[in-house]
Picture 1: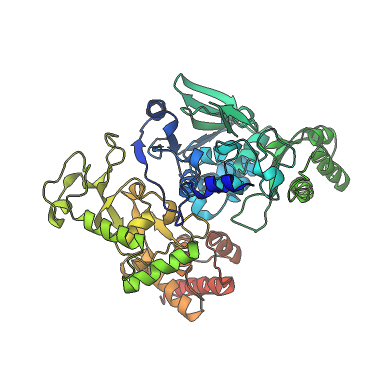
Picture 2: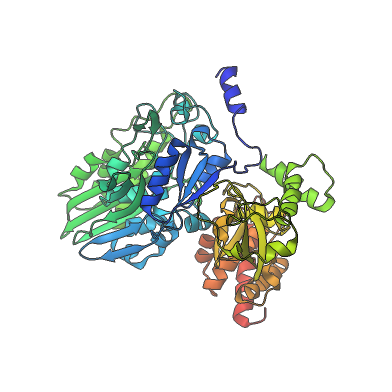
Length: 350
Length: 235
C-alpha cells in the first residue's frame, strides 16, 4: 500500500475514543413514514433499529456507512413473534435477537433458528440487536471496519484478497468484494426458505431471503451485500411451516466459545421418510459473501440415511467446490472448519 | 487506544486537572448546559432564562420530541436512574454511557472499549443487561435504568446487587477490576431471573463481559456465593 492510501485512512473520521459523530435524529412511527423520511433525506439517511451495527460503524468512522441523519425505527410496532401451524412463523423486523433465541415455539418448530440466534454475539447485544439487523448487518471484515477505501467503502479494491483474509474473507470466491456475510440467523433463514417483507416507496413486497442477500449487489453505484435500495426497509421475516417429519440443527465454529463471529457455521434442515432422508436443506455460514447453500451435499443426502459414512461424505461434498484464497495470509484452514461444521450439524440429527 | 483513553478518563475524575482532556471539557460543558439556556429544542420552547428550577418544571420533559423539526437539537429528557428521575440534556449522538458518566457523574459505569466489545459498560434497562456505550440515551427515556450504584435503592435489584458486591469481596471477584461494574450488572440480571443458576447458566449470562485479567474463576465463584446468600436470605 502506498503512502497516499494511508493518508486517506489516517485523514478519515476515525475517532480515537470511539465517540459517535454528530447526526440528526429522525423518528418514524410507521414503516411508511420511515420510508418517506429515507426518500426525503436521500443517501444521507440510514435506518437504525437496534443500532448495534450502525453505531459501531459510525464510531469507527467508516465513511461510506456513516449517515448524517438516522431514522430511528425502534418505536415501530414491529417487535413480535407470531407462530401458527398453518401460516408458520412471522418475526417483526425490530424483534430483539434474544426474543428469537428464547421463544418456545421457535425452539420447538425451528430449532436451527433458535440455536443460531442463541449463538449471536453476547447477551447484551442479543438484547439490543434486532431480527432484520442481523440479516443485513455489514461485513465485519477488518478492512471495512477500519475505514479502508475498499469496494464497500467507496474504493475499488478488496484488501482482503492480498492481505489478512484468515477470518472474514470468502472461501468460495467472490467477484469484487470477498468479505463474508457475518450473520448467524440469516444462515438459518436460508436453510428454512424464509422470505422477507420489504417496505419501499411503492409499497410493500415480499422476496426470498436469497434475493435479499445475493452475495454482491451494486445499488446506486455502491457495492453492497444486500439488495435493499437506500429507501427500503425490512418489516417482517416469514418462515413457512416446518414440513412434517423434519428436524433441524445448527453448529457454529468460533475462535472463542462465545461472543464471536463464525469462522464457519452450518444449518441443516432434513425431512425424513422413516429413516431415509426425503428432503435436505444444508447451508454454510461465515464462509461466503452470502449464506452458502451446499447443493451437492443436499442432493447426495436425499435417499440416504444418516450414518457416519454418509455424514462424512456429505461434509466432504459441501466443501468440494471451495476456492480458498491462497494470496495474502490464505484462508484454506476454514475449508476444514466448514467441513467439520457440516459434519457436526448432521451428527446432531442422527 | 481504548486502554489509554479509559485510564486518562479515570485519573481525571480524581484530579480534574488535565486541561488537554477534551472529554473532561465535554463533561463540564454538558453539566453546564443542562442547567442553562444553552439547551434548545425543548418541544419547540426556547428558554429565555436558565436556571435549574425552570428546567425541572418543564412539562414536556418526559418524552422525546417526535416532530423531526430540528433533527440535531438537544433536548431535556427525564431518565429514571436507580429509582430517581433525573433531568438531563441529551443530543442525538449521546450514548447512555456518556450521559451517566459525563453529564451525571455516575462514574461507577465504565467505558473501557466504547464499542460493544467488552461489556464493561453494562447497565440494566428494565432489568435487561445492555451495553450503555452503544445504547442511544434518547431511547432510555421511559425505561428503568439501574447502574452499579443502584445498591442503595430498596428494591429487588438492590438486594441482588448487595449480595453480589459482598460476594465479590469475599471471593476476590476482581483483580484489576476494570470490568467489575459490568460483570456485576450482568450477574445482577442473571440472579434476578434465576436464583439457582447452573455453571452453564452463569457462563452464558456472563459471556458478554470480558475480563482482561482472566479472573473468570473468581467471577464465577462470586456469583455462586451471591446466589447462596440470596437463597439463604442472608444478603
